[in-house]
Image (cartoon, rainbow, N blue to C red; front, side, top):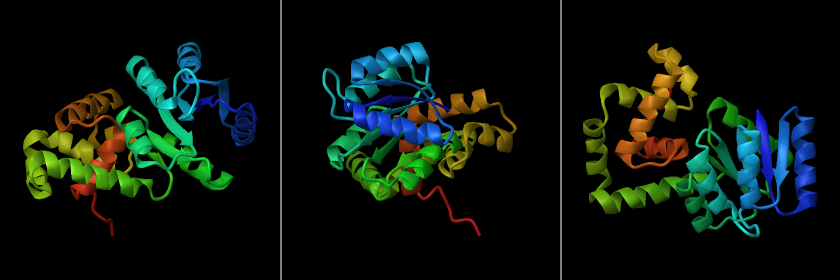
Length: 221
């Protein structure tokens, strides 16, 4: 996994880089603000960007919009001190794949961050519940009732898209979903694009939150 680090505090950047490289993670570069992050992303093509929010010139949320619009294959995880709901929701809406707090201890941070390679969203404990609550309010306002919205899901998605949605929500990677359904990873990504479009969602993190709220993920016994 190639990682680009973006933060306007050099001392924090140095410590984070040392932590990641000690665990065998390839840190390909660093940037001090959002505009430099976009330039480095173009040049270095990282798999993941760890992005602070409060930075000069261009903040992390603005940079997330710029990077995801131009380089959609790059995953962006916010790494911030902000626990404000507005920052969390705006980051996810802007295309972030995760939101981690700088208050995490190093072991928990590495555990959550490493989950990205398994197709899991990187979210600090407690934040997933906030996201679910936000989508519940949005769906309720837009559709009248959550039940009516749930009943409409299968009408909007094809049977194959429902299969993909359910498997992705269970935490499978696109490759693993393809293996289960005997389809190529490229085909799974195509179906995911259609799912996002039909359900008016922005990214994989929103899909997982949506599926959980709709009861599409059942407990396994």
